Amino acid sequence: MADGAPALTVAVESGRARRSATWRTLFGGAGGLGAAIIVIATLAAVFAPWVAPYDPVALDPPARLLGPTAEHWLGTDQYGRDTLSRIIFGGRASLSVAAASTLFALLVGGGLGVLAAYYRGWTDGLIMRVTDVLLSFPAILLAIALLAFLGQGMVNLVLAIGLVYVGPFARVARAAVLTVREELFVEASRSLGSRDWRVLLKAVLPMASAPLIVEVTLRLAYGILAEASLSFLGLGTQPPAASWGLMVAEGRRFLQLSPWATVAPGLAIMLVVLGFNLFGDALRDALDPRTRGR
Image 1 (tube, one colour):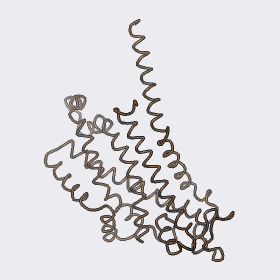
Image 2: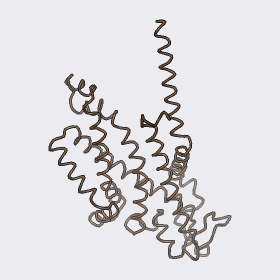
Image 3: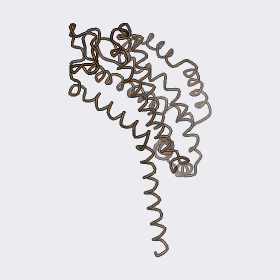
Image 4: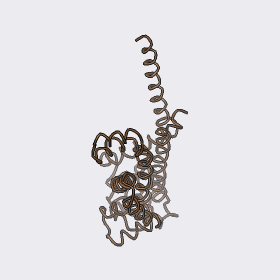
């Protein structure tokens, strides 16, 4: 017992040190800045009806194309609508589409990648060839083609962006599962007669989840860019609803008269995407055993 107490103390202290290092990596420096941006943008989108100072679709022709004023902090657009209110409500469209499409890509692509790595053989070959086909197309062009086939609408927009990112998730999931499928604890679970689904859920996925978690944060940023790009082209969110990409497209005609109608939503896109990338990089470092102790 006397020999065991110091060892237990060292183990406890080591665990505390690892948790402290992980916390500092995630929320210290750039990671903390990214997390703050994500939290602020998410809260503003969720509570938009209470946060926005004006109705985002209310027209006020006498106040059209104003610059920043005490009443309209970021000015107004060509219809007199408050730019700040439209940015806040536009975050709902951009973040919800990005989140839904990323979840779809995670479930479909991640599931296919897990099956490919676990069963190998013809299953692996078939799934990876389909993945190669998806990855051979530029993402935005594939999304445009899918929307042209499926038609416009919020559901089709989510499906189009989600299908574009199925390939990357399948690749990441396959690589992660391949690193753990031959580990002793997986073999032990199989030898005990556990069914495949139980081995995957209890033994494989918990150990292979870190790369997928990081991929989710990065794909959320790409999803916001994809939604903004498609809305800019007129294939995403339709007027009079607010969307960051749609706001940039509508305001570019009046860039010389009132640049705020275009610059402000562009800055919103840049800041939120930057926040997800900063937090994603910090999350990757925190989950990587080679760097989390630094």
